[in-house]
Length: 326
Ligand code: TXA
Ligand code: MG
Image 1: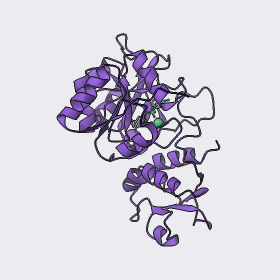
Image 2: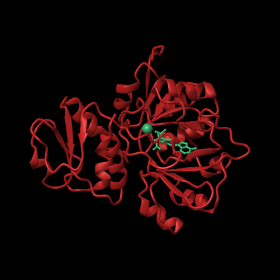
Image 3: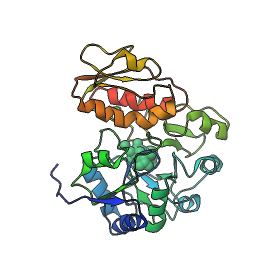
Image 4: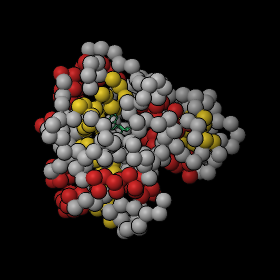
């Protein structure tokens, strides 16, 4: 796709930088902003034209709906209808790495394009102080998918944003590396029991504790996928990805996990997600390490097995997509 080039400004996370980011958003601009999960490519969710800019910059299939970000629960409740489960989850985990898909309210101002024409809307109240300041200042729902080109590895630093989107967006607001490192958990509260659409920064067990029942992750198989963006191949580095590897084969890059994994493959193309075996640390390192190993130029990245508990479910989900046939 040929996209008109524009200079991408670097804003710092001072009050002036935040005010400038909000002002660009209100004018219909595209600004990458930090959140606690990953960087988001933000635009005014109420403007179809601004949202169209996101799809163009990301080269994202336009059937894929976006998350609308709000400064607090009150603002979110003006956009969507919260049943008892949605309310309990919002109160437990907002602000934070949880997205709720709920029916649109009568007064919902999120554009049809941002919702991809659905009668539901994905809402999130992030906890990152810079994101919250931008949202308060913009005073409207802000659509923000991860700030990477479609199908690529999500951005967890301003440098990663620029590697994918420099010259395609108006600005990047640099708030340093993101803390959690994987995207929000997505739960649909539409009619009946809540459904887990994407594992993410809030572990499944924490969600289950609040709603008092177990959740099954909806696979891509089955009837019409309820989350159209959850395509199988995603987060894809240029290299092939080989999962559950005991050790790297000769010539493979190596993404290890836990004690001993580093010693297994001492090379410039080897990294350990967490030498002490901490899944929270591993999530924070995941996307940045995949990018670094990709830059090593090996044909394949071998990845150690990652336990499934805590943030491990989200890490394994992203790794499976990175390894999916494309
Ligand atoms: O942590 C995050 O959630 C990050 C930060 C920037 O907030 N955002 C993010 O957005 O990951 P994105 O666009 O990469 O992923 C949003 C997912 C997509 O898979 C999309 O299909 C799904 O949310 N989604 C959005 N609206 C939906 C809806 N109404 N029904 C079902 N799924 C929806
Ligand atoms: Mg994404």
